[in-house]
Image (cartoon, rainbow, N blue to C red; front, side):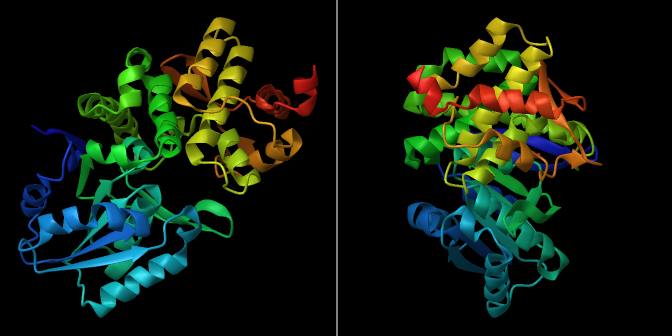
Length: 369
Ligand code: GLY
């Protein structure tokens, strides 16, 4: 039996998230959206098309007017306006009109790009998210952020545009390699740390089942993680206030991601950013020293980094300034008031940030010492 959750937008029910462990219910869910006389374009990347394209198309065949599959090469490097342009071309060639529907079948890149194409094609067509990575299931498929990278800046061009349905089949997470899986886990952990201490403890208690990727545990993990995301995006859908709490670990994390030329995964950089932010929270006397070390060390069993040697701390500080989370030249830094309660702080200084970066910086000298 699938579980479901409704996400409200401006206090009205907007779309449902379905939590399940197969694609068996997809046809039924899409029929409920009224697809019988509509064209459907499945937008995937080269990997997700190969892995899940047939299963998803099998649910569509005979249930809608026409099915088109459009795939683009996998990877963040393709999260560009050129990729969106290719999608527009396919939609025009296949005669898609305003009543037709797009399905995003993939991770964060596919979801963000498809959402942006849906938001802009003919001034807006419906779209459905079928997230296939842990990062997409726990974070990016919920809340209507869509967009592309531009000129080396992440998510620089985009729109808030809500899907009609998010279909979470947790069994697809078994296809992820360990590195991708654990990188996604960083965002799950983030949700516990910023808003739900009981969930954070549940994650630690279920470490072995999470490693084994048991369906029932994955379903509960994704549901509880989504509950935090729901609370935040319903309160502040357009990031005018509290939604920024979801950026915990992202100021320094994004800067590391950029300095490493996107060779490290987003979740790995965010884990480092969360350690640094937890360190500043300790220095602000909000976390105790024990709590800081517990938060830091808890990333280790989930194969996430807590230190890095290949950065220049001064350069990372500089890069934090280029982050979109600056307002009138001032950084909105997310800190932990305690485990399970994050706050937005505008008093964090360059010295605080630099000392936090030095805390996670593991230099050759450290090794020699
Ligand atoms: N991934 C952060 C947000 O959805 O706001």
